[in-house]
Length: 633
Image (cartoon, rainbow, N blue to C red; front, side, top):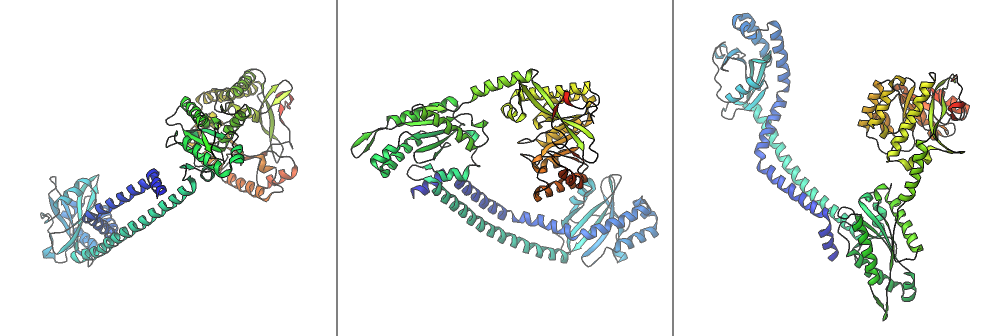
């Protein structure tokens, strides 16, 4: 019973469901109270549907009248023959449901006069120019004249009529006449009976919906309570490892600090006093630690005597988190335990990670906290150690900055050739840093520069390096790699705009990225296209690359990643993938470049798909500019 009370008291889902159900109940009461208004609205909808065919037919007839003589009022008043012909045309619309059908015209004061009347009894017809005084609904006539929108209204006061349609005849944005159709009471009653059935069905449906909703809410609450019991330790009101296993991806780890707490030398307690007594000690320590935490913090029993603390950053800054970890350490150190009339004390070691927002996953964050915990134990236990690689990383970044700003940054060039003629199309510029005899490749550089100002500086240097080569060599064509973030960087776009005269020889390859703001990137691509640049998606089919790149970005080339191309001749899936994308690109005027080509068999398969360009060791490795064929063949 206590567990249930705690569950309902702490679980927001319970309150949300209760509030939601009360809301639905009030909504049902409101709808029931205002059912008459909804009936009237539904009546109008049914009326509109019932006159749909007449509405269409009458429009055609009136359009034909206007074609005969656009001056509808004057022509019908002066020409008896024309008037009778028009009455005959309108009479086609008459049926058993229609009581009367006639045309009216308004004067400047919106006073109405008969123009055409289809009444079969000639003596009962409204004479042309005779004043029309509506017995009911005069408001609707005025409204139709002003708003030029058809209206239907129910004739409540007239026992012989059911409802009336008023349809404007508009010329030069002015209502020149009104088509009025009076429907019989019989027709209205048939619609009303249908409406009554609909309203009754609606009531029953809503009632059944409420019952099903209540059952669903009960099921959701029951499921949540079962999970609550599975995830929680009832003796300590903390979470267990099962919760962590099933919710790794759901926990927004970046909003927490991470602390791993391990009871020092706890194995001795189990050996000396037995596991049952050891469990009692663990429960006592867990209760004490839990008493220091807020409701938004997560306390998870990570192992037997190891606890994972996810401390919410919402109310705690970095210094407050450090103070909390110290409070945990001191509190355990001051605790006294009694087993079999023997007193002893324990200590804890804590490994912690503060900058969780820099990690890729919760597993990585816990791993770094565990690394700090290991170092803590290695250095003597009963202490706190914070994982912090900023010093090492800063020194490494300073070294990279020095190399980027110096002449050590170079580009090697790998040719991209036509697979049919083997003619050179252009070179891809591949970043290298020459550190003495050691050549550093991009995969050793870029991860340490992500989200830093050095990354933008590196991009600028690469562009500048290749612009110089293009200006020195009027024959060479080069593609450079830019990230999606580079493309929405105004400074990078400005450099490309300044060198737009080279756009026919400088291609842009977009590197894969974890997340792309397609709207912003597409805007940048459109700007670059105005300057004449050609755009390529690089490494398609690897990492984060996906179909959204093709669907959301206006590209000229698609470069299929080598991990797919190199297996195309002995992997059916790779074969099918390339064949499919080749067909897609042909249909959308996108040219394909295949990477990592290393034999003629791959070339032949690609040619059979219509792939036009390729690069790889089969043609040439990447070389420094000085080693290239100066004729670029």
